[in-house]
View 1 (cartoon, rainbow, N blue to C red):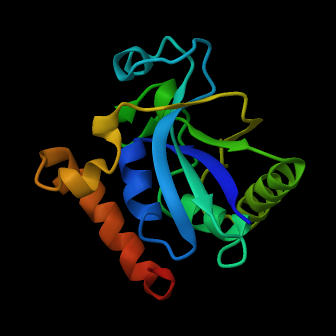
View 2 (cartoon, rainbow, N blue to C red; view 1 turned 180 degrees about the vertical axis):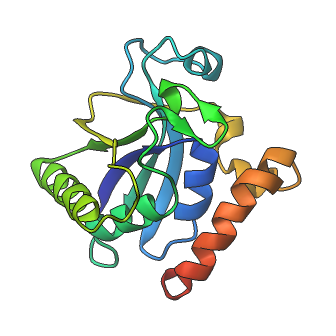
Length: 176
C-alpha cells in the first residue's frame, strides 16, 4: 500500500532532490497546489497571482517510512518560520505548507507543529499552513528531477546542493 504527501517548502527543486534520496520514497513529483486557477504554468505561479505554492507530491511506502518521518525531514530541510519566503525566494508560491490527504495526515501535521513549537526548535513560531489538498497540478517536464539534470546550474550549486548535502549527512542511515 502506498501513501501520498503533498508539501511546500520553498522551491520544489530543493524538496524533490532531498526526498528522492529517502528510503521508502517511491516517487517525487514537482507541481503546484492550493491555487485558484486550473493547470497553471510556472510563469503564472511565479507571478504570485494564482495562489498556488510550489510543492512536491511524495509517494511513499508507509511500511518503510511513516508520514510523521516524512514531516521530520520536511521540517529539517526548510525554515517553516518565515511567511511566504525561503531564503531569497519570496512570495506566496514559496510558502511552507502541508496539503493533507486525510484526517490522519492533518492530525499528525498539527501535532508535529505543536511539538516543534513547544520544543522551541526555532526562535520563531512555525507558520506552516496545514490545509486539505484540493488540487495538484504537475509542473512542466523540465522541473522534474531538476537538480539531478542540472547540477551545474548556479542555483543548484549554491542553493540546492548545500541543502542536499546537509540532509545526506543528517539522515545518512535513511538514504536509499
